[in-house]
Image 1 (cartoon, one colour):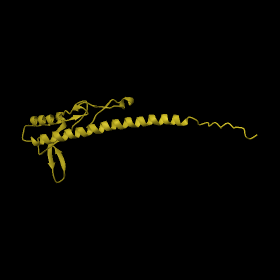
Image 2 (spheres, rainbow, N blue to C red):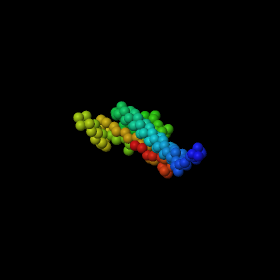
Image 3 (cartoon, rainbow, N blue to C red):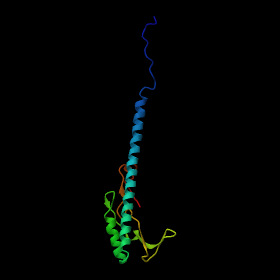
Image 4 (tube, rainbow, N blue to C red):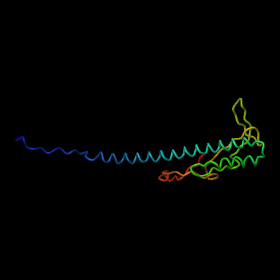
Length: 147
């Protein structure tokens, strides 16, 4: 009489794997979106650094020219670069003149051109424009300012 087939016991946790997989897929997509936006931020920072370096070297090479011509040279060379698809623009307050102390490795700003120039490239509303985010729109953040 024990030869009767017994019904298999039903497991109360049936289908839990599907629910967990769905939750983890949403989490993974969020992490990928975050990684893409962080990559966009790092790319913009690197491109702005290249533009600032280029503008500073070009302006330093033209130190014998008047101030407005040095700024024009810096703007010209910064414009050769783009930050996330937008040409880099400089304001006059992004270019600082001063002196460089070789022994202490310190830049001291001054009103008159000295022996050094410091250029700061920015991607904000006053210059190039803010850089867009791909997935930041989910959190109502469509762009970011970068220096």
